[in-house]
Length: 207
Image 1 (cartoon, one colour):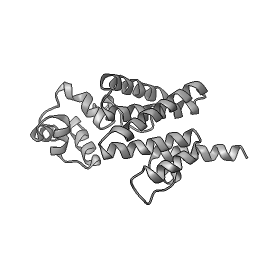
Image 2 (tube, rainbow, N blue to C red):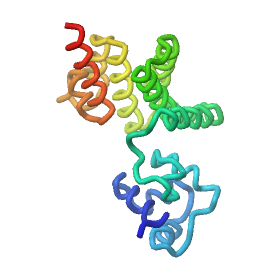
Image 3 (cartoon, rainbow, N blue to C red):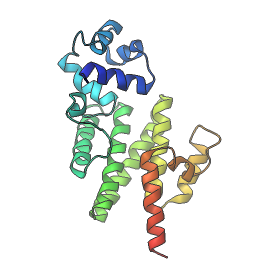
Image 4 (cartoon, helix red, strand yellow):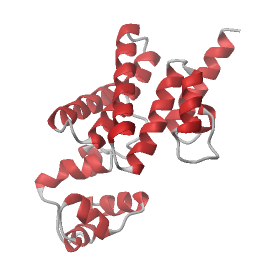
């Protein structure tokens, strides 16, 4: 039977971090994390949002009210965007929140596209996403955040059909020297593969 502790343990292992590393991120002791994971205690209520935010899940998922954090519906994507925007406005100098907002903007733009949303709204979301991705790339000192932001930037550029810029970013901004094209980047994530599939369908339909 799943518990909040078992969910935290699974998510921590998926991230590839230790109990000690998670405790530092959350500002608690390693013993506290161990207690949660062994169902000998629960996180303080003030830690629930930071936990959900760090693992990029909803509170519903943490509380076992959802079986999957993937395959979000349109309303859920809008809710995630709203939450990301609120956190960004509260912590504008935290580049993790820049990144989360950029991801939410890109996801919402793609969802708007699939749901015949307003072209102006889609353009606004994608332009904002690019600004936030570039803020992370230019200003963050966290290599992991920068790498994720580069991927997001490349997907957004491909979404906007700015292929040359996307390929330049793949070759010169992504840290792996074996990756030199946007198409290679797109195959690294489920979002990228979904975009690639969409663009290929659009190209076929326009022939």
